[in-house]
Length: 347
Ligand SMILES: [Zn+2]
Image 1: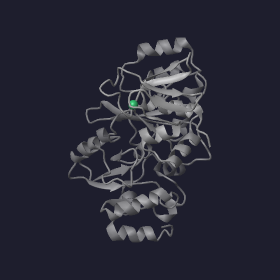
Image 2: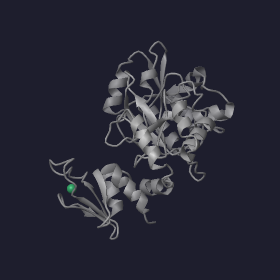
Image 3: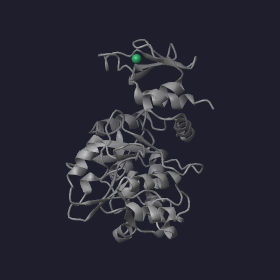
């Protein structure tokens, strides 16, 4: 399989410094993330992606290879993950917004903590302004069918950008810190792909992940529930999300997340993943987390076979919140959890 050029370009814009396109030479140029341009990061663009000949070359450090090897080098993703991501890659529609729209919005844009010209999808005056825009409508429909606007623990705002190179036409989920400042975000595709069940997220570039919804944690409650994806945390009281758990990593949290969670030392942590009955990765992660001594929610068969995650469950049962008791009563530590998990028969 050949990686689509659009996918490679998106990765280039994600990882290279101040990327730009040279129309004459038909090359992309940017700061080299491998050598960081020596001490010239942000000043020089000595990395070239030559589309015609399918290679990348850095004139500073001499790094030279094909796009696949470059993406492996800068993203730490595996070959199979890259193929998978490229396969699920959003078909980014043609620019559908007029220049006037963009200019109008640029005036309204207040914060560079978000992608370019983000529109607040929970702000009626902004969505009214874009009511004829098909992408905004798709996003609003997505929010409605997934019950994101009714969720018990939803964030203050959800955004969409029609312009940002990496994140455009995707649902942008803001991560606030405890002082309600947006310090991180993830974007999610709003194009439903029947082939693929897993949600596909992109993170803010060059930025440490923080804990989603940490600003909404109530320390009076007994538990904090830690989910992988932010959307699941929408539906759980005291639900926070780590934005992906790497089962091979010794630490579950990034440095920023660790600092944030340390502020709640008296609240017990329960990790709540997708249904172990449907997702092999979730099953494996649960096993590893139990072995490491974490308390983990194990989906009861009845629900786990029917629903793949908490969002799915809330849609199916038409509820705005997963009952806290349901989570607590099905959470285990150590051997007890491992026994429950083995009963699933898919280890
Ligand atoms: Zn270099």
